[in-house]
Length: 104
Image (cartoon, rainbow, N blue to C red; front, side, top):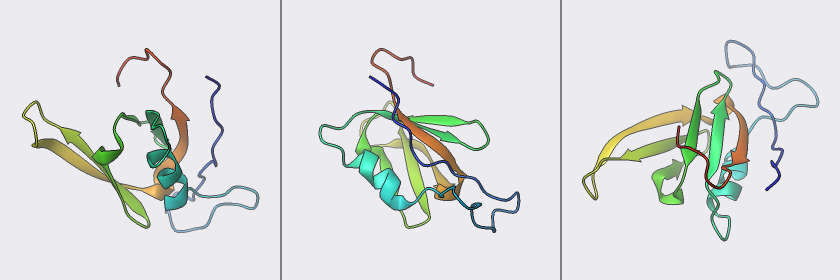
């Protein structure tokens, strides 16, 4: 499958200034598009820091207006290992996970 190009997020180091002209910051609509895809396709979120996360199940993400909660399940069913709240303004790109790709 071809990589899908998504809006790039660029922000000032203080995180307060808007993206420069011609560059659009990621919004909850962008992430919701990926979470509600039918059929769902696992995707990878890469942050401006270079850190990345694979989302293999949409129910592991709770979406907020300016952030999202990424939940990591434990080996025990129905119990989370941990969760991270991440600002949408930190997302650099979202791309599909290629079939057979290794987990991060």
